[in-house]
Image 1 (tube, rainbow, N blue to C red):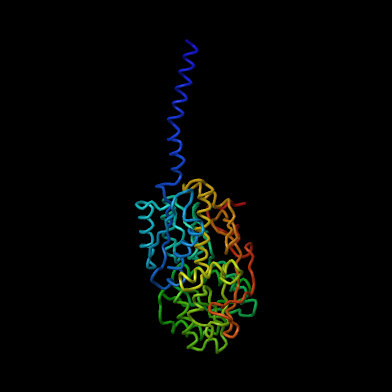
Image 2 (cartoon, helix red, strand yellow; image 1 turned 180 degrees about the vertical axis):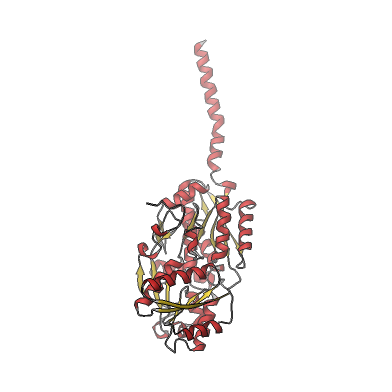
Length: 410
C-alpha cells in the first residue's frame, strides 16, 4: 500500500510538472509586454527645430534599431514618431495616449525644453522611461528629475561652460543676450551669465523674443548700443540662423563685437555657409568627422537624411541603442528592471562613452569647436576644427549642486 502510494504520488508529481512546462515556457516568452517593444519620439517635424531634430532624430533611432538587428529578446522593435508643433499640451497629449492606449514602453526623445518637460511629467505619472537628447533645460536633472528620466546629449550648463568659459578667457568679458523666450532660452542665458560673472565678466543686458521670431532688428540694435564685447544668441534652429544673418546686416562683427552661438549646430553652419559662419565657437557632444567609425555611420545617415548628424540626433541614436541593450540584459521591458540595467551598463557606442548618474544626467565628454574659414574646408560638411575636449568630469553640473530629489546629500 505504501509503495503504491509513493508510486501514485511520483506519477502525479511528474504529470503536474509536465502540465506546468507549457505555462513556464509561456511565462518566459511573455517577458516582452504585448510581444513587441514600442519606443516613441515626439519631435519638431515642421517648425523652427525641424532641421536639428525632426526627421533626423527619427532616422537616428531607426538606425539604432537596425544596428541592433531589429529585434530584442526575439521580439520586434517599433519606432513611433509624432510632431508636437512646439506645443507642450500637444506633446503631453501624445505621450498620454501612447502610454495609455498604444502601450508604448518608453519615449526616447522630445524636441525642445517646454514640450519635453510636459512629457516628462506624464512619464513620471505612468512610471515610464523617458530619455532626452534634444532639450537643454537644466530642470530635467534638477527639480523636474525622476527615477526613470535621463538627460542624454547635452544641457545648458555644458554649453555655457564650454563656450562661455572659452570666450571670457580670451578677453570677451562683457555680454548681451538675445534669448528665446521659453525654458531652454532662459536656462541657457542664466547658466552662461553665471559663468561670465564668476570669471569676472559682466552681463550688460538682454532681449527676449518668442520662438519663431523673424525680425531681430530691435534686439540687435539694443545689443549694439550696449557696447558689449559679446552678443550671445541663446536660441536655436532657424532662430539662430536668422539672428546671425541679421547681425551680419547690422555689421555687428565688423564693428568689433563677437557673436556667440550658444546652441549652434552643424546644420546652422551649413545653412549659413562658411563665409558667414566662420569663426563661430560651438560646443557639441559629437562631430561626424572625429574618426573612421563616426565617418562611416554619418555617411549612412547623410544618405538617408541629406545632412550630417548633430549631437541631438547622435544622442537619440545612442539612447535608443542603450535602451535596447538594457532590455536584453534585463530580460524584460518592465520599466524598473530596464532602468536598473541602463544605470548599471556603461554607455558605449560610436559617438558616446559615459554613465548615468543618480540625478539622471548621462555624463560624457563634450567638445569645443571653431567653425573653419572657407579656405580651410576640404569638402561639404567639413566645417569644424577641434579647439578642446572637455572631460566628462568637468562638462556637466557637479552632482553636489543638483537639486534633484534623488541625489543623496552628504
